[in-house]
Image 1 (cartoon, rainbow, N blue to C red):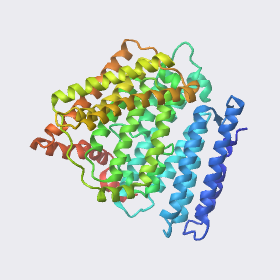
Image 2: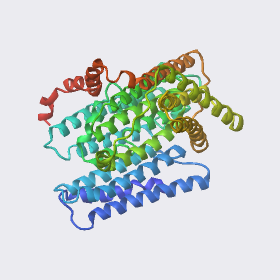
Image 3: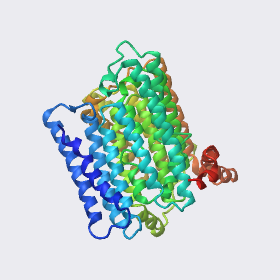
Image 4: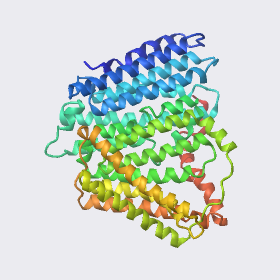
Length: 509
């Protein structure tokens, strides 16, 4: 048996002690919580080492440990330990400190069960437990109207996702006679039946709901009302649990062109929308929340392109970065307050923007050719995703190529474009080495896949050009009104407020 299977136990044992006496727990109790989290982390690392030594995974009817599960278990337990350690000082002296620690430990344990689950029924049960526990954490300050509103929105969207997944599990049971995830992946060798197609569509819908995809993203941007450790905990396998669900059912999803199309279109739309709104936010934590919306959209896009290993690496990298960013958000506020105003920035014209995109893409093509020659050719989907990342760097390159740009700025921006291309293909190769055996390869593009790749490139390219030209039209009177609309997310969150009955619903909680 894998040691990782024992990882939830110390968390649940201490969580029960905290919840049994929910008041303040003075003395060493927060330290005990940290030790339990550290023991859980050690068990997950031990399970990973067992996996490496044995060369094969450990599987049962309830839990299993393979490459994907091992990576996620170590990630969840590590971020969980950091958040538990941070909470010991952050909530010191709060009246309900004990209850918070208990719910926090129980949530991390539930997420560990989720990432280790071998059975869809266990996955559903873990999702249900996470929903209940996280709602209690969001209501740690129950007198705050904003906290009650955020909890209501979260419960609505997360609960609908649970219901959708339960329905998908029923359909898969009817089609394959099993809920074992490994069995389901190979249960349809001749193609998906109609019932299985519907079940796959429901799994995709569940993943979109749980990753706060457009247009039901509003709950994520409001959970910032909860204590900061909760915001960081979201990135320990909760907000990205939908991505894990997609990776777990990658073979089935990849067999459905409709599902892959939906992931590309909705993931791309969420990524662009979240990034646009993030740029207009004035509060640090709110900007970080919108950044998470964008990053989850980009991760969904990667899944839709069939880049499953890269999507898992994205989950790991984003979780570590964003958890640190939330826990360090107060320092960020002080840094912004104390920072010196920068010197003038070179403003690129239309010609400089055109030259920037050509140069950035040329550098990217050279790097792609070199990596392909040394390590083998990459899939068209991987090449397209890298081009999208280079579009984001083109804005910096445009500044370097502006007529007023100093030579040093030109050199730095060209170096940034080259470094971005090298970094992308390096991470892509690392993902293939570490995780590639646990997920299917990207499909060979057909007419539909090529159309999606082209649509994605054009969409992100247009947005990148608009961003590069932003200094030319940012001070136009028309943009001041547009900024207000963008900052409010075009009021889609207000529609969700109406759906749950607005403030009247919150008062009944």
